[in-house]
Amino acid sequence: MDFLEYTGKTVEDALTQASVQLGVTSDQIEYEVVDKGSNGILGFGSKDALIRVKKKEEAADAKDLAEAFLRDIFATMNLEVIMDSSFDEVDKVLNIDLKGPEMGIIIGKRGQTLDSLQYLVNLAVNRKSSDYVRVKLDTEDYRRRRKETLENLAKNVAYRVKRTKKPVSLEAMNPYERRIIHFALQNDSYVSTHSEGEEPYRHVVVTLKK
Image (cartoon, rainbow, N blue to C red):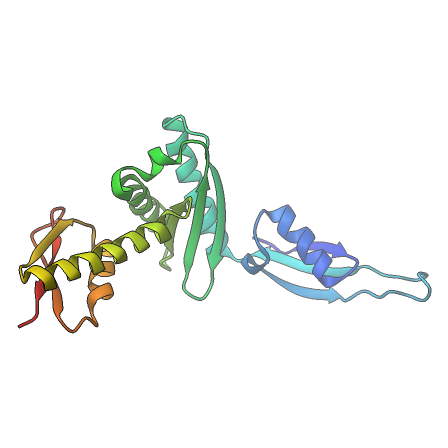
């Protein structure tokens, strides 16, 4: 993408104009200041700031690919979904928050539909990319709420194991959710955790330490 020129009363105003026109956040563009502008004297002789801007290709390409892929899926599902995307330059993560009237369908049972969509959009975005970009989907703060639920589950199961002195096997979970359980109990002095079984039925077992 070639550089485009934008003006504003200040450099910040010009950046805002560029972000709106390009449909990205300010951290997803690179720019150079051609002219900082000036206020003039008593309002006379003022001059707008001028910058040259272009999208950061990695962030822009990933965002465009991800949103186009998801739009096609949601159209097929006949769902109205608004996507709010932001790119983390440091971790190379594209965060997409989904909003709409039927988010329960997108979340699915224990987040399985949301996880499947996340897996597919990652494949679509990185299929032709030389630099890997991780795409994270969320809606209605589900990821945080699910994490808290699993952490509470881990603590309750640990208490049960300590009380009964018998191991407890949890339901099958994906690798991410199993890690939450392991991490929640890693510093517990009385119980230990390990995973058993084959995917997609692999599950965590909590046992009393010997």
